[in-house]
Length: 213
Image (cartoon, rainbow, N blue to C red; front, side, top):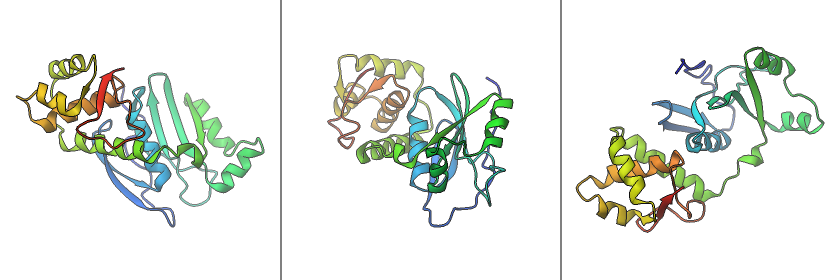
């Protein structure tokens, strides 16, 4: 696989009034700092979307914007590269009129085989249980960086073919550390191999059921 176009943030300036979130991104294998709830929610989606290969937060400054306005994420998927821009209120007003918010940025992206994907803040309002469950799964992955191995991951996926709760899964693999079993199972959920039917409505726990997607 070719090297990522962007590897680190172009700016660490925190926009006025935003909260700071320090997280670990399994897909990029490093810690990163996010500013604002919208950036956090978008990051959760990127880590939870199997088609996303890698990404970089605040990859470049938008030359047409004032100050330190950065694109929110560069994203590499199975189908190509995108710049994700979560629109601020003034930018959303421009977009609502059918106008391009940053024409020069659009042109630069076209010249570099990328597309600009604009997102209204309201489009990131995922259910709170879903956000918290995604955070929980990513925290397990961050705390258990030693991979369980493909053989164990395949065995866990097969075991969930007809559905198992987390506690049943841990009992099935009692010879392994329960933390590692959960981390492996959550990794499979994030990759789209397993599904948790209640992930958007109930907190993850021992009775959460996992099934093959």
